[in-house]
Image 1 (cartoon, protein in one colour):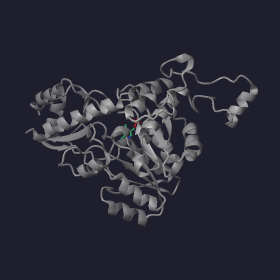
Image 2 (cartoon, protein in one colour):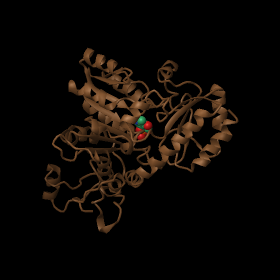
Image 3 (tube, protein in one colour):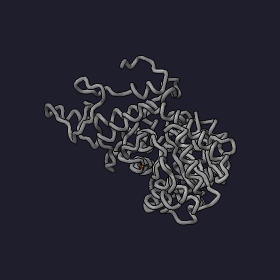
Image 4 (cartoon, helix red, strand yellow):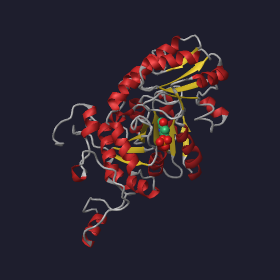
Length: 409
Ligand SMILES: *Cc1c(COP(=O)(O)O)cnc(C)c1O
């Protein structure tokens, strides 16, 4: 594709922003299953190590199949955004073996002993544990405040000069809380503090944190970006290109959390249909939420697309649609929850999210089982809470399955 041709839609970007590394006229970037790349001469080898020749050396440091996925994600996250000079924003993506590996690169490359991360409740379980159980051991501290109250963020930043990174996850499990990215970033930037956003639940189609000047965007690509549940992966994107090419890249390459060509290929294929999938995911989710909110067996629905959700206004401010994740509490509590989950006929019993099919889980006994009971309480994970990632099946079938299963609740 001609790089000068201006793409005006995000699906076009998802399909055509990358894919220039095609060998032998192959339509798709192939799966470059090769650990190393050859040199024609000794001089060429030394040129590549010196950086004068940008072609490949070794797949832990980069591989053409990774590059296609990375360039696509970078194009999606920066789509339509201008930098301070009015030029199209450039961001760099580093693809990792998992979301956890990308998160490790983020934290390890930006923080050192004595520094503090400011974050909030309801973080993804793995992020919470990485901060407390791994970074805690290296002397990096984590401070948690309810970032939906902007005064608490201001107070924390003013009080503790050791805060070096503000990490936001929005929307977040399990009650789909949302944080105002723009408001928090404005406060952090006044003090030159870095801001990272976990954009996994939203995807760049629904929300683009780089619009608000954040420094880093993170994804578990395992979820909506891949979309089909075929691979684990993660990506770290940064707007400081120099940092991403030097320190960010160094930690990424030396910690060894690189992706693999097959997973990167699957991710690239999945992203091509991101817009279509997200439209249908969100449309179905709204219908499911409205149905559940009216059902007599359901005590409460947490979905940020419903006007009753406390973060509905923030959702409307920064997201195109509310997303596909929700949770709900059955009136019958834990036992009703178990009976309901066991009675499902089509919806799939599994943790994870963002796959084309509908996934239903029980956080208290599954994804957040590793937390202490008092921590689960802080995270709003009650025993009877059901978490649902609404898929793109036909809505009539999703509703019919819920209807019959709720009769057992
Ligand atoms: C899944 C997930 C992660 C971790 O990603 P993995 O790919 O499982 O390592 C981080 N944040 C959020 C919001 C997630 O959903």
